[in-house]
Length: 424
Image (cartoon, rainbow, N blue to C red):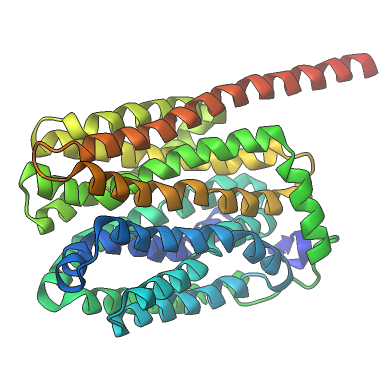
């Protein structure tokens, strides 16, 4: 163990990087589970409480709202208190899950999802900071690849386990069971020293005033903006497809809700495989190529979901979408350091990206629900067709941004080469 930045100890072995990645991944696992719970309990919510499709969509949107808004302050707090911020956020997450199970009122359902979002907001910025400051550069890919598997694992666990729990004991049992899993993972994560200690000193300039100045710097960075738009395109597809595909399979393909949830679990399995594959492919093709190819294929797959033949056709397209979402994740997260002007801006830029990301993660499931309310969900109605094309439009925005990012990065490289030649 050597000395890392910010006073942390540096992990210098592949084994240490792997186990840190697993500890950090556990927090993304429970986030993936939380995102997946609403589709599972939606029929009960609609039947027992009379909620509309847009109200159901808003339950997911509220989670994503606070997940996005909390990312920036969580990243700054982590620079001062280290991995303890992640542990504290896990406790808040558990409280939000228990509150949802304990209430029977829509306003309190929203409040519970807001708390869950606050708890989930710490994982990306805190994990990025810890991976950067406590892992030897040689093993960043190991930690990032393992960390990227968390969301797919969470989706898979929720969609494979929770439909049976819901059928047996209702929505309360679903959220209480998830709370128990989250609490156990938080306790297990404490085995890693990085999550129990504070850095011995905060990095220079990491203050609330410095944070505001840093936000101003990254907010005006055009290459970071393009990267953010790529991420928005990918996340809109992920959240929208995950939220509404079970209902689509039930309403227009005639599957039971349990079978629909199990089939959509293929998205979680695909994500579980996508992150390490994307990290490997990134080393061969480069980050930009992975992003362009990934967002293009995601756009096409999503647009075809409502017209795919039978349940099998939908399943294949959903799996492709899930796989590509996480295959792009290492390239997107790894590109942040490439597009900022100074290394110390990486943390602020990561938090800023996840904050702006609420445009996609909040709007996508909610507007999809509004489109279903407007155009209908029965066989022969066009609500799902319009909804999936709406998601594909987000991907088109991401594709254009990825291509512009390639052009911008090449200009920067030519400028650096030219300056080096002049200096020589």
